[in-house]
Length: 273
Figure (cartoon, rainbow, N blue to C red):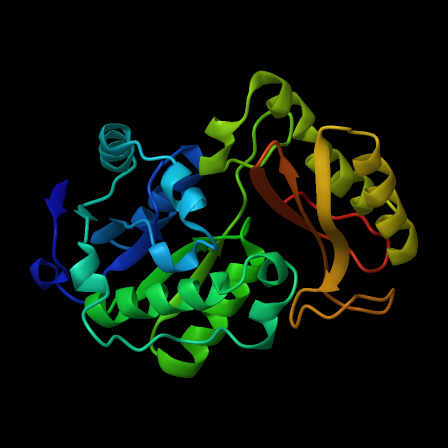
C-alpha cells in the first residue's frame, strides 16, 4: 500500500472509499468490497471540519492513525490518501447546499452538517475522479444525499451502497463507539432492539410505537428521533409505501449514535442490513 498526501499522485478511475479515519471492521468491509470491483483501490482519511456543528465535537472525534494504516493495508487498499486541509479547501472554495433532505432528521440538530458532507465529498470527487465510490448504509441519510449529488454532478460515477456491519449484539459499528463507557456500550444495544422490534411489527403504526416503547425503557439513552420513512425521499412512510426504512438517532452521555434498518412493507419483516 502506498501512502500519498495529494490527489495529484493518483490516477483517475479508481474505486474510492472516503473515510474520516478511526477505522474499524466496518470500514475494512468497505475496502474489501472495493477490492472486488477493481485492483486500484483508494481510501482517504480526512476529518472534515465543515460537517461538525461545534468545535468540541471536532476535537473529540477519535483519531487512530497507526491503526488506520494497518487496517487499510490488511483490507486491500492500494493507495491511502491523506490530504491536507489546504488541498481540500483552497481559498474561496464554493460550499454546497444539501437541500431539503439535508434539513430534516440528522440535519435538524446538526446545523450545516450535510452541507459540509456534500461539500467535502464533491471536493474529493473533483480531485480524484473515481470510477466508483463506496459508502455504508449506516449513514443512510448521508448515502441518499451523496447519490443525489452524483446523479446531478457526477453522472459517470457509480455510487455503491454497502451493508451495515454489526457487533454480535446488533450494535452497528461506528468510530464513535470507542467513546462509549462500558455501561454506555451495554445501553447502546437498545438501538438495535428498537429497530428489530419495528421490523417484526405488523404495520407502520405498531413499528413506530414499538421503537418508542423500547427506547423509553433505557434510561441512559436520550432518543432524538425514531421514524419509519420512505427511503427514496425521506417522507413519512405509510403501510402502502413500497420501500420503508426505520431510522433512529439518540445520545448516550454526549455520544451521538445513529442506525437504520430496511423494512418489508407487506409484513414489516426483512433481512437485517
